[in-house]
Length: 189
Ligand code: ADP
Picture 1 (cartoon, rainbow, N blue to C red):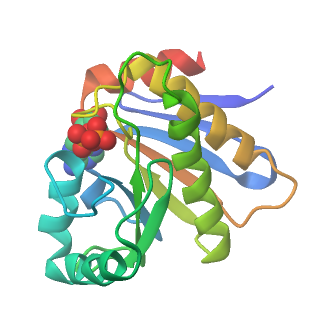
Picture 2 (picture 1 turned 90 degrees about the vertical axis):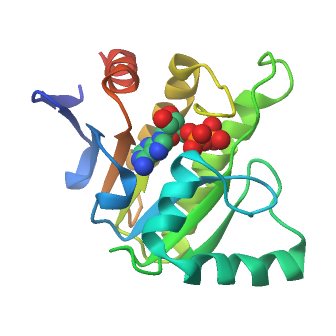
């Protein structure tokens, strides 16, 4: 039985070996973690939403690194992620994950969204990331229904925190507003 603690604006779920998942309302550029996940686009060219906020707060160094990655590989496929430093942000890395644009759920969107979360958690293992912050990938401009996306995200993150071996101690799931937060909380209850 998982242990859940709820305060007014946060929910904490305890996993084996002292690991935890924390859901909160906030701005992902303001949290202190080893790695922040960005909801990027496959061109890695920056955009609005969480992407714009990360580039504004992190400064131009992040885009310079993305320019180099783009020059070598042409971008990042949907469901994947690339790594840069975090510029002026209080993190070591930004993992730029490319979520699917939602059409009707019948075009591989669930698998692609799951792949984003899995790829970022695998990158966390590779880079010795102990704390990582996720936004709700694809639920903004990309139109993924929030409750469906929440189910996928929470399943992948929980499976990772239940692993026998992982370097990840804490996952922060940062929801931008109360309604997205409530939908995620209801997915856990
Ligand atoms: P996508 O193109 O993948 O849908 P968006 O950036 O448009 O990405 O939205 C993803 C989610 O991130 C949305 O739920 C949006 O409300 C949220 N969001 C936007 N800005 C921030 C921020 N600064 N911190 C955390 N979440 C944010």
